[in-house]
Image (cartoon, rainbow, N blue to C red; front, side, top):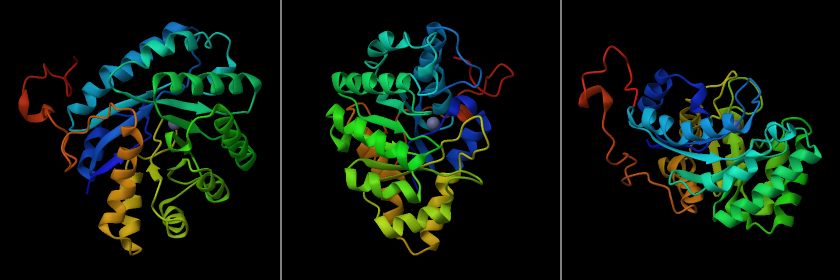
Length: 291
Ligand SMILES: [Zn+2]
């Protein structure tokens, strides 16, 4: 089984997670830029973080046989902080980098005017950079937030096929299905969405334009939730090909629109990735090469 996690915050995870993910079938991930827990106080803090998503994190993932790409953006939460918003002027240069496969995550958190401004500005940047967009939907007021999100996307003129609307659930999936956008589902340990509810949604809406992610981050989350959904699909009578479509081919098709997705061979094995555990025995006492 090959798995592509299209939304996971590996910066907040340990190297053990990479090892467990690889063993469960995860071969590729996209890490969208988000907040760091502690609020950022200046633009430089974003730039070091973006460099980490472009340099250190793919390097760390590759040591465990996982291909790492990223999506970059000013996240909705920090779009409200005037100390952060000047990062919008720096973003276009970062969106040129090779492993950036989308603008994201953007969208609404508390649905403020400042969030809306950053959302619209970054939709325009995505068009200028010819990149698809990963859109976060708010966890409160979800139906209203999703409707308004789709209105902003429509008004921007962005083709729905270039937009992935994430963190959906039963009340919001229908709105996004109608819009023509791709549908993302974040599977959590005990709230919001679980593997069995996900299977029921796939039964009702089919497997086209459907993506499943673990959204693992600092909070209570689990990077193996993608695999759990795959297993729940098989147990419910979906075929191995259905699983491959949702857990691999759909995310590949969505992010491939960037023209930059590099996932190696069709088997899902990343190309040209050295295995840290055998290639270089000398870690100078560390469990990971330090670059
Ligand atoms: Zn996220």
